[in-house]
Length: 255
Image (tube, rainbow, N blue to C red; front, side):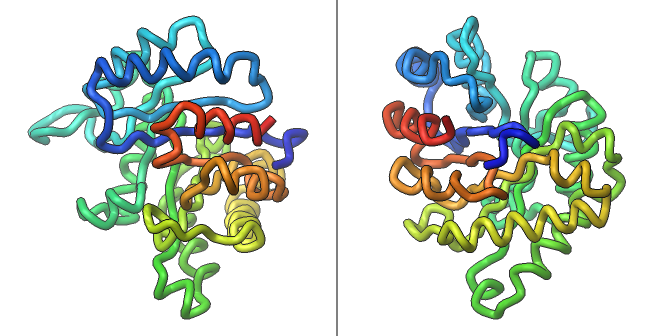
């Protein structure tokens, strides 16, 4: 982390977990555990049906509630989708876009990720933009090329001013839900490579002020070591964001 230059963000991605009542109970449990932890922003990105109950329980705390996806159209014949306008009308400020599971299971491409990103930014939201390589790409030694291309394609048409509302989450696909984790050195190196691309696109000032999270199975055991690296500015947390004490430990590490 480099708190002098950019904000640390710890974001939980609940994925397809928690009913509205369960979400409320979880927020109630975690609120006192993270109270007063002012050195990082805390976000939980929730399934659409739990957003309202989570927001209600989070009132008065430093916890923000975000969404896990957003559509690129403002409205129309897109059955089952939710627009940025709908989310902002519900008070949602953060949204995850381009998560590897969306890319793997639901056909997301860099083109659709870019369209969703621009739609969310146009609506005033802050985007947590996910990108990262698969195992074969890591083993082939082309991680830098892959994340560089993703960064450029996913941010096409995004202005330097809009980058103030973009958080990038580097998530090596091979480390998500597998129990594998990039070493702190690998995470720092790749986050640094992403920052180099941002410098090419927007200049050093934007690159140095952009929060880049690590999102590949960060947990209560490895968070401190990962967050100690200068280019790792937080975490996009999966499984550990469903257990209050584990999530607290990660927030503590960010302090």
